[in-house]
Image 1 (cartoon, rainbow over the protein chains, first blue to last red):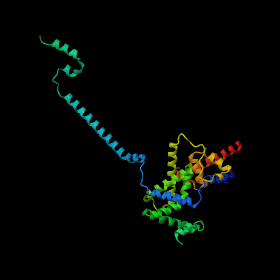
Image 2 (spheres, chains in turn cyan, red):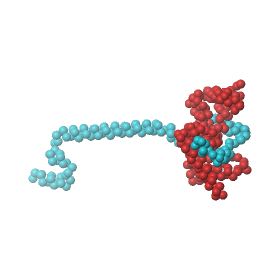
Image 3 (cartoon, rainbow over the protein chains, first blue to last red):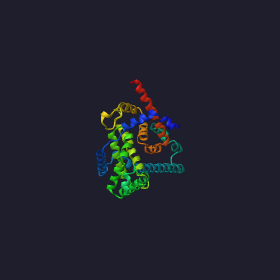
Length: 124
Length: 198
């Protein structure tokens, strides 16, 4: 005896019979004619687009737009970084007119220190 | 004999009628694809009972099954130009109806998350017909998963094969087979428990 036959024993037959009653389709031609009429009337309705369907339509263009924006910002960031590096390189190659100390540590001097240095180095 | 007559008589003439049924159906599909609403109406007449059975196996109530059938036919109508007329129309339609029914179940779950039904809604039938087994079965069915319930109804009541069920519900044939096994075992156990408790 196969597994299928073993499983499908007498109690299964009773269950199946019960299920057939529970899930029995409506009887009577009138019901089916009415359902058919309702189905056919729905076909003539103008298609309504739900908001999630509308969102779904916009999903692809939105993804493409996001990808383009991401790419453009990537390119812009890269170019800005390149330009910054070039400026820094140029600045290193260009000889500075300022004293070495000032040129090397311009930002290390506070306003107070600068005034003090000015007063100390000022010819009398 | 015309194809239409042969179709009506297909129970009596199995060999001839199957071929005639397919030819009849194919002619109507092609006509419907060409824009004939009358041909599509004929396809609705031919398939609405089976479509209802598929939907009813998946949703919880007769009303939802009706909605799923209507949605399914509407989707099929709009996708008709993508259907290849050399394929069986019924199988294609059943898949669409099953998807519409599953979609409805998902929407109902989201909507009714706070008010789950305590018992499975019965199809509309004369309440006087309810017998003890039917009542107990309805109660037992609420303990199965949606998928197990759909599989056992589609297989045992509607006679679909495991492969057809898998295709309709979007799962492998083996899963349908295993769900059927578990659903039967669960129903047997639940009905025995109920009998011993009563």
